[in-house]
Amino acid sequence: MGTARQPAWLHFEASLFSERSFSWAWVFATASYGVGDVVTTIAIIYFVPHLTEANPVVRAAIAAFGGGGFLALKLLVLYAGIGISLWAGKAENDPWSFYGPPLLLTVVGLWVTAHNLALLL
Image 1 (cartoon, helix red, strand yellow):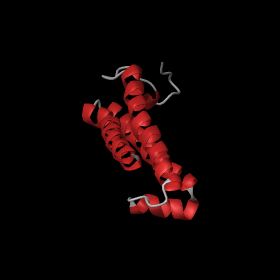
Image 2 (cartoon, one colour):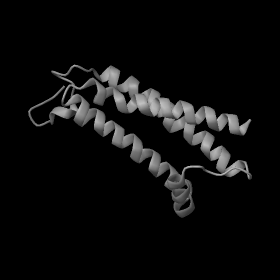
Image 3 (spheres, rainbow, N blue to C red):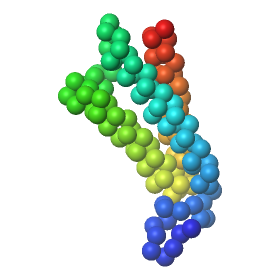
Image 4 (tube, rainbow, N blue to C red):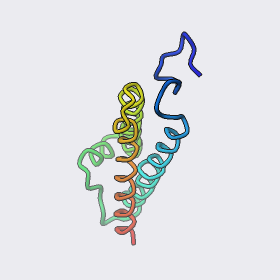
């Protein structure tokens, strides 16, 4: 619930969306893009000597900072998506901005995880 001291983006009162829909959308995005891609990418990078990371930005982050750089990039993308959902989507009651980022990350995460699994097999 919102209070007089709490910014509007911190609660879902008078919004077209609910906390439940927000939570489930981001659970799926985190599971596929966050967990699935991270686990399969780490398996490829560290346990399959003849394969490397194809994304040049991720490859540079790993070269410079190791696995922590890779995780930092993942968190940056996830937090940016959550920010878009809350500030652009919820604040403007725009379903495309609200559900678009988690949907996009879920689709990308599922595709990349499946691709990585195919490379591992």
